[in-house]
Image (cartoon, rainbow, N blue to C red; front, top):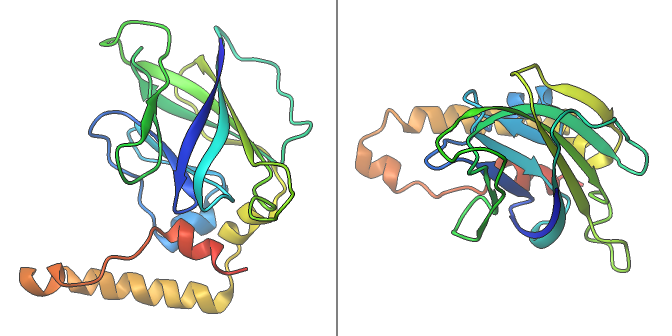
Length: 209
C-alpha cells in the first residue's frame, strides 16, 4: 500500500521517529562517513533524512510491501537501505523541530515491535532551490526483515557528495566547534545554558555551496 504525503522539512531534513526516540549523533565525522542521505540512531528508532529543500513541504511516497520489492534505481539520484525498529503504529514523519508530524502506520499491532527494512530514494535534491526545476521527491519502500547493515545502492547527487566530502576549511572549523561544545559541558550550568544554539549540521553543510 502506497501513500503520498506532503512532509514538512526544516534545516534541510525531515525525520522518521518513534515516540521519545533520540536523534543520532550529528558530528562532522558521522556525516563524512555516512551515506549523505540518511542517518539512524543505534536503536533504529530515529532516522534523519537530508534534503535539498531547506524548509517547506516535499512529496514523500510511503510504500509498504509484504516482502522485499525489486530494486529499481532508474530515475533516482540516491538509493539507500537501512533497518529500523517500529511497531504497527509505524514512524512519525516530518520536520525535526516542532509538532508538524504525520503518522505512517505499518502492518501489525501497535505493541508488536519488530525490525523493518526501509529503502529510501531521493531525486531533485541538487536543484530543489532552483526556480522552475521539478520538485524534490522521495520514495520510502518498507518491508519486514531482520536487522541488517546499511546498503548503499546509488549515491550520485552533489548534496550527498558535499556531506561525505566537506570543504577542508569547513571540516576544520566544524571539528573546532565540536571541541568547543564539548568543553562547554564542563562549564557551570548557567554559563553553558547561555550558549547560543546552532542549527543542525545538515543545514550548515548545505551552506557550503
